[in-house]
Length: 218
Ligand SMILES: NC(=O)c1ccc[n+]([C@@H]2O[C@H](COP(=O)([O-])OP(=O)(O)OC[C@H]3O[C@@H](n4cnc5c(N)ncnc54)[C@H](OP(=O)(O)O)[C@@H]3O)[C@@H](O)[C@H]2O)c1
Image 1 (tube, rainbow, N blue to C red):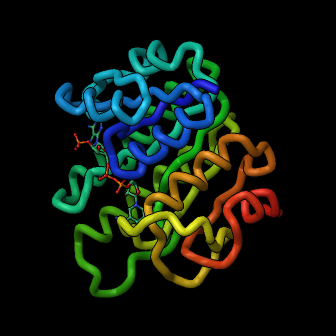
Image 2 (image 1 turned 90 degrees about the vertical axis):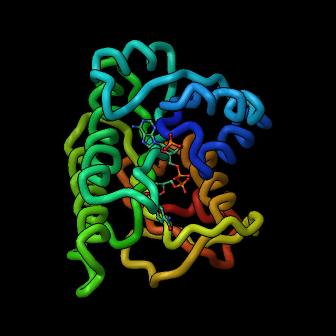
């Protein structure tokens, strides 16, 4: 399987690239900073330079030629303000989905966030509200498309080692955290599982082995 990952130098993306390479899949990481290409290659993936806030859907569709799946794992990141929540967390996902449609790449796994789809919690601040609005709009855009999408909403991300044990279910799942390494393992399993199409799933640490949790998606 050839999988193009938007945000290819992100923490989840690098872990996912390793997992895909280990199981014999071809991963392609889209990076905006050419200096990040080496890390992506070290993770076992191909690196392609593409700034998702500058590229056109047509140009991205060309990069998707021959791919079997797209993973949206980009994000404006913790230091960013409201405008970049919109230009990355919303608009770059819309761009990838549009490009996926144009290129005929039907499978699309979007990394969203728990909290999306609801009003921001009171007092959480303008940047959090912009982030949640961006993720909610990106999800709505994807659901309206003729793609085999899965929306994955992790809880708070940590850099702890993988546990292989998760709680994965349609919302609402009680708030919690999840190691990025487990998120990467879930994405790899979702890519292989047709039953996950057209599902919105929340993900936190739990008791179920990843494969069992993915294969029991209703
Ligand atoms: N933090 C949390 O607790 C949490 C919880 C739930 C969901 N999430 C979501 O999980 C996803 C992945 O998280 P993560 O920690 O793996 O993210 P991350 O390490 O911050 O990686 C995000 C990647 O997106 C890239 N990116 C930003 N703007 C770009 C652009 N214009 N063009 C191309 N790439 C661009 C960044 O590249 P640069 O290095 O060049 O900036 C970075 O490599 C994000 O969507 C995040 O919102 C986070």
